[in-house]
Length: 223
Image (tube, rainbow, N blue to C red; front, side, top):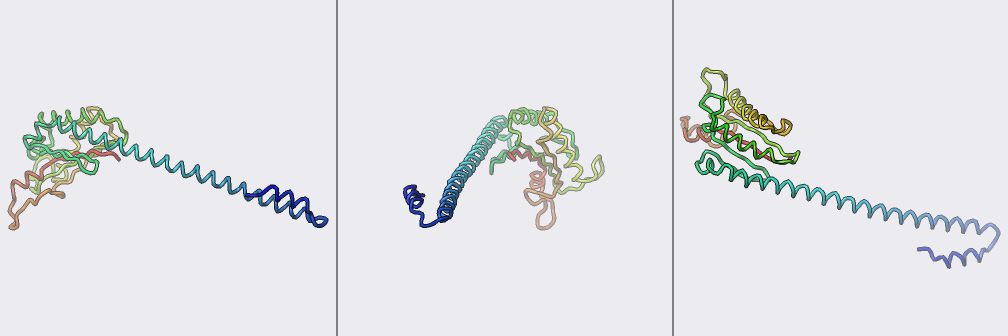
């Protein structure tokens, strides 16, 4: 910091003509440097505070999303308690994502994409609850899966066609209940993502495993 008494003494003891101009210029430069440093420190403190504020807002937003997903998981678990108890449906919460797995037999007849009335009832209950989620970044992925048995005749040429048609029909139920089309996606995976092997080591079908692989998955998450 500049000592103003020293500055005054310097001005009083000017040694020769014209030298005061050089001393005065030095003083001005020192003052300018001082004010530049002060302004720089002030801006840095302001920037640091802004970063801290933004981080706090982000942390609060993440906490709200996690709480919303946790509440949704608990409420859906109660809403679907009967189906869960019967082993027709499973619900899990992991990494702030809800995954509901439904047996195809609960929703569709073999080789068909037309929903059973009981399947419609389950989907309507799920849709009625997720409609209450107000966060715009809440999304639902609908995934259809089949076993490895090939399609022989009928409306659909392959398991790809069948799984895609089934997931599309599930999406229609959610949309008809008023769920936003911007926040939903339908996918069909045929037998490309089995939970367990469809065949044993000799190439024979394992019926219990094929039944597990014929399924629907609803994934709910905050993006």
